[in-house]
Image 1 (tube, rainbow, N blue to C red):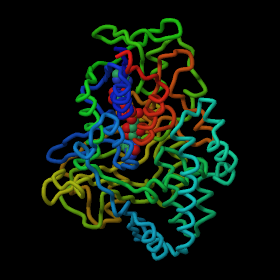
Image 2 (tube, helix red, strand yellow; image 1 turned 45 degrees about the vertical axis):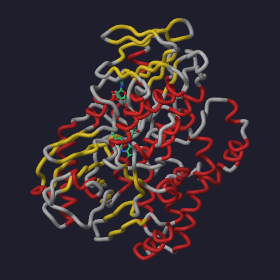
Image 3 (cartoon, rainbow, N blue to C red; image 1 turned 90 degrees about the horizontal axis):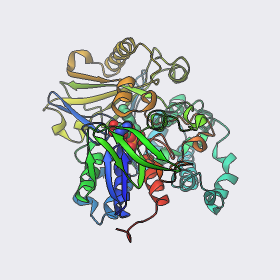
Amino acid sequence: MPQACVIGAGIAGLAASIRLRSKGYEVRVFEANPYTGGKLHAAKYGDFRFDLGPSLFTLPHLVDELFDLMGESPKDHFEYHQKSTSCHYFWEDGTRFQAPADRAAFCQEASRVFGEAEENVLGYLKSSDRKYELTAPVFLEKSLHRLNTYTNAKTLKALALSSGLGIFKSLHKVNQQRFTNPKMVQLFDRYATYNGSDPYRTPGIMSMIPHLEMGIGTFYPKGGMHRISQSLYELAQRHGVKFHLGTPVTRLHPEGNRIGAVETASGNYPCDLFVSNMDVVPTYRKLLPGVAAPERTLQQERSSSALIFYWGISETFPELDLHNIFFSEDYREEFRHLFETRDLANDLTVYVNITAKETPSDAPKGSENWFVMVNAPGDYGQDWATLRAKARQLILDKLSRILKRDIASLIQTEAVLDPPEIARRTSSFRGALYGAASNDRMAAFLRHPNKHSRFDNLYFVGGSVHPGGGIPLCLLSAKIAAAAIPECRNSA
Ligand code: FAD
């Protein structure tokens, strides 16, 4: 039976291993960490459980279809439900907005809180739907690096309509032209952070992102986000994928126009096919030294990273939900610090995720598990001890001011994750959460393709390659790569 090696068991590596298995390959996955899931991992600090990375779950059918592919019922192994409120938003002046998932209710509430005309908000959401429906089949669900993508009628239509899609202005400009209330503009600018970009530079086409939340919906997996990677790991194991945990791949061995073997501390493994789920920058720099690298792609600006505080809080806050955002007063300044001076502004937008709202056992009775995150620049060797201390103080001051409680006095347990640690744990270049940033109109075309241009049997999946970062796009990267890989059922 032909053999395939997957390097890395992040969400995309797990999905790739399942898809290759379904194509008849014998699959081995080499994972540097003693656990699978990469950024999608969990931990217990004291009596509090935390999802360590992603907290927002969209497009769950992309997980379901992996179970379907293997002939299993997703519901038997992986359950989730749709959220009726997508997020609670807070501002310093006391404005609060609980965003309903229901579209009509959202428009009504936005009109009440922000004074925006309901039809105007609805018009924006409809245009978000249209942009998504027109561009996703072209830019997210297919390889952009195959000629037939461009000869396809849908692509031609998307390109022909591209100026109307807001490609030539920033997301902020699109939002500012639509809404009168700056808070509404800020709320919709925030969607740039879904792929770690800057709303003042990322193209207006990103105004399709709200469609994911307000057109399709946000979801929560039973047992927490970690169940996404864990259930795929279990699925892969049930179907015979072999996992080598705690086994970093140290080199790929080229043989002519193919890769012959992976090298690990426990020996070399020859294989027929290779899929790298390692960030594409270290894949070239570390695993393929001496092989010409696509420098323009590798030197693209990276997405933002994050500073996360995991706090066990000895009280409950009925005004908070699963997702909560406390906005800064100067959003532009925040992004200037993230992408220009590469440090932190003096007022930060704070995201608080509380899974105990959905799974009470994640925290002791009367307490809550707070995942508190601020956007941070990538790791360029800054003084992270100083930045961590600054962020912690700013966060505590803001949350205490807005929630009118002394938050510091409620912290029972504490852990922190910063960009260098994200890089160390997952090999993400500069600790970027989403690979390259989409601050440029050409970013989609500059992302590394899912197949190597010279080595016939080397493929790439994950947040640093096409179509991009975030759970849904990582799952799509595995789907696009697998579609280009030949079936080998007959030879099995
Ligand atoms: P990763 O998760 O980066 O995993 C790569 C794996 O490869 C790791 O396990 C690593 O150990 C392994 N590896 C690397 N090199 C080697 C080697 N040489 N040999 C063997 N193994 C190797 N996305 C969302 O959709 N929603 C969110 O709300 C969200 N929030 C986020 C919050 C945080 C704090 C973070 C960190 C990320 C967030 N993301 C979110 C982004 C999302 O987590 C990532 O895009 C996605 O999980 C990346 O998956 P991946 O498959 O590319 O690889």
